[in-house]
Image (cartoon, rainbow, N blue to C red; front, side, top):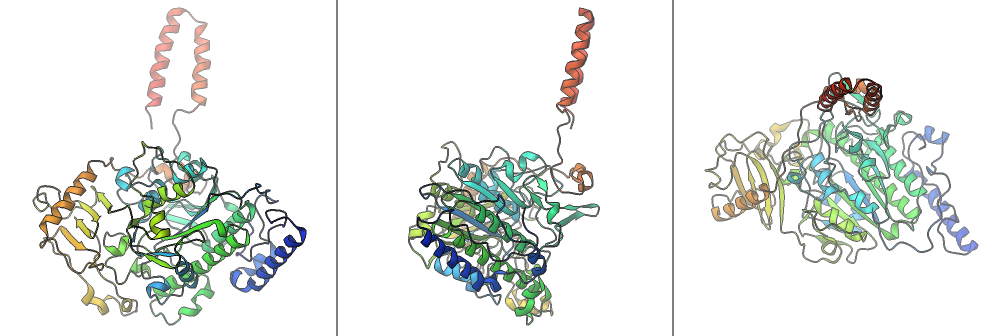
Amino acid sequence: MAPRGCAGPPPPPPPQAWFWPGRMLAMGALAAFWVLSLLTYGYLSWGQGLEEEEEGTLRAQSGERPEPSTTATSQPHLIFILADDQGFRDVGYHGSEIKTPTLDKLAAEGVKLENYYVQPICTPSRSQFITGKYQIHTGLQHSIIRPTQPNCLPLDNATLPQKLKEVGYSTHMVGKWHLGFYRKECMPTKRGFDTFFGSLLGSGDYYTHYKCDSPGMCGYDLYENDNAAWDYDNGIYSTQMYTQRVQQILASRDPRKPIFLYIAYQAVHSPLQAPGRYFEHYRSIININRRRYAAMLSCLDEAINNVTLALKTYGFYNNSIIIYSSDNGGQPTAGGSNWPLRGSKGTYWEGGIRAIGFVHSPLLKSKGTVCKELVHITDWYPTLISLAEGQIDEDIQLDGYDVWETISEGLRSPRVDILHNIDPIYTKAKNGSWAAGYGIWNTAIQSAIRVQHWKLLTGNPGYSDWVPPQSFSNLGPNRWHNERITLSTSKSIWLFNITADPYERVDLSHRYPGIVKQLLRRLSQFNKTAVPVRYPPKDPRSNPRLNGGVWGPWYKEEYKKKKPSKNKAEKKQKKSKTKKKQQKAGSFSNCRSDVCHHRG
C-alpha cells in the first residue's frame, strides 16, 4: 500500500538487488545513494503534507526487491510522460515566464521535437498514442468519451502495453485514463497494464478526486487496478500522489527487466488548483487563472525532476528512454498559452494540435539537438514496439511510423502527411458545400489535413484567435482585440503553408486552387477508410449513486450466468413429465431465453 503524505526522497535500494559483485563496492554505492538522498531532501520533499509524511515511509509495494536476472536487458525501459492541456508556449525553452527548469534541462540534453503534433482534445490523443491509429479508424473521431456514455476504446484494437507485454515488459500506468470504462473489459488492467493507479475520467478535483459531470451525477474517481482507491481519499494533491506511486513502482522493480511506465498527469487541466508554496514565484502575474496555472506547472516540473531522479536512484536511467508530450494545446481561458500559434485546445488551428514534445535518453545517438521533421502522436506506437524488439502483425493497418532514427540520428521522417481528423457529426459550417469543395469534398464537414508543407482545413475549425501574452491581465479581452479574427461567414476552406507561415496568418486557398484540390482528394481517400462514429447517448445506469458513489463500470449483461443455471434446473424437472408436455415446455423456454438475450 502506498504511504500517505507527499513524496519525499526515494528510499535507497538494498545492496543485494542489482549491484556489481563485491561487498565493499556495494556498500560504497549504498552510502553514496544515502548521501544523495540527504543532500537533495529539501528539493525532493513536497512542501505540503510533510507532517503526514513523517508518520510513514516510502516503501516498495511488494516488500523485498526481486532478484535481478544475471544479464541486463537489451530492451530499453520506456517512460512516457503525458501532460494535460499544457500550452505550446508554456515551457521555459519556448519563452514562457513560467519556470520549468527540469523540462528545459531534459529537453536541452535530449532532442526537442519542434514539428510535433497531437490531437486537439484528450481522448483522441490518448487513443492514438495507445493504438497507433487515427480516430477515424477507431470510431472516436467525435469529441471525447463522456463519463456517462457506454463507450470505450474498441476492444478489438491491440494496445501498446499489450504488445510490450508480449516481449517481456512489465507495464504500469499512473494517472488519467480517459478511454472509457463502462464495461470491466475497458479498464486499463484489461487493456494491457499490469497495474493501474489513477483516474478514469477526463478531469476532477486534485485533492478530493471527486468529479461532477452534471447536477446529481457526482462520484469518486480514483482507482487502484480495478477497485476504487478509498484509502487515498485523504487530500493529497494528485501530481504529488502520482509521483509517489511512480517512485514505489521503480523501487519494487528489477532494472535488469524491461519496464513500460505510462505517466499521464492530470496537470495542468482545470480545475486550477495547486499547493500554496508554488505560488511564491508568480505573485507578479496579475491574471488569477494564469497565476494558478503557473503554480500547477511548476509543481509538475518538480514532479518530473523527482521521477528522473528515481530512475537514476533505482538503476533504470542509463537504459531508459523518456518521452515527454502534451496531449493538446492550452486553453487560454484556463491559463494556458499557445502564443504565437493560432487557436487553442479543441481547435484544428496550430494552437490546438502542435504540442510540446521531447525525447531524453542516454541511448540517443545525437543529443542536444532539435528535430524539425514531422512527428505525430500515432508514431509512438510502432516506434516503441520496435525499440522493445517487438513485432507488429502484418494485417494491422497502422497510421503511425517508426521515427526513432529520425529522432536519434537526425534522419528524414518517413511521415509526409497527417490526417488531423474528419468529424462528420460536428456542427456543420453554414456556408460549406460540395461546390466549395470542387465537387470533391463537402466543406461543411469539419476536417483538417497536413501534407508536407501544406495544411488544409474545412468546415468549422474552432476558435481562431491569437492570444498574446499581454492578454493575461485583469483588463480582459479588449486589450487584445486587434488580434481577434472573425471568420467570414462565407468561408469554409483554408489553406496554409505551415513551414513558411506557422502562425496561419495568410490563407492561400484562393491563390493555389490546384493544391486545395489535391488535399481534398487526399481527405476523400482517408474518409473511405473511416469506421462509423462511436458516440452513444447518455446511459442513466452510469450514475455513481447506483455504484456505491464511485465512477466505474456499470454495464452488466442482462442474461447472467445464474439465469441459465436456473433454466437448466427447470428443464431437468420438465424431463420427468410426458414427452408432449416436455416439447411444449422446451419451446416456451427457448422463447423466453431468446427474449432475455435481446434485452438491454
